[in-house]
Length: 229
Picture 1: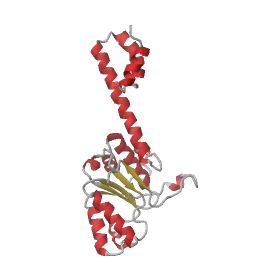
Picture 2: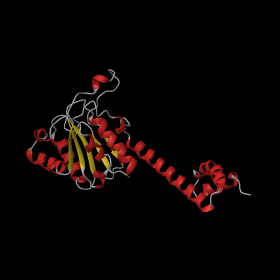
Picture 3: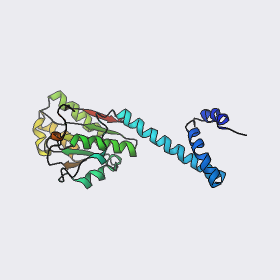
Picture 4: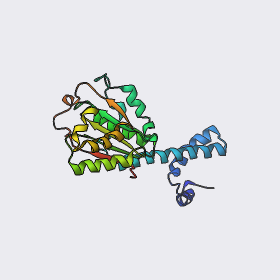
């Protein structure tokens, strides 16, 4: 009679070691319900698929190296009702990544742009094998010519081929003067703005609700989620 111990080497050889725990957990359920062997097999396969999916999500989140793992369900939309909740949740579906579109989160300091950017990244990790780059504090100050050229190269390579999520304290029209020449500004921003969902976030700063020194601001933080380019 087969036992869990006799199954273990075979499952390991087939790279199904994780199924051993599922078998042990399901046996009593199967015996009590007198399930057909095929139904039992289906349960085990469903358990294995769910386990692999969960491990894949954890791996993608780990590789993204978020500054903070932010869940959109924890965002206090009631604090700033002007933040477009429905539009943000629509973006959380990850459809913009499938479209190779970008997201530009605009608004004053402290309204939660960085939180939402990382939360969108987390939702993409949960739904997709992501090719997404998150740039926090985009256009914080004027760019030098080498910086502007690097940014042009980045945006050009990802235009219609990969998605970006960017946060900025400026309105889109105020981004142009930050570049050393108008031709380069047009080259970057035309590609970016014409392929992006622009979300304007207005309201009160959340930072007074946080303890002083609990979290410091960082300029130019970039998180990459499975970026191939």
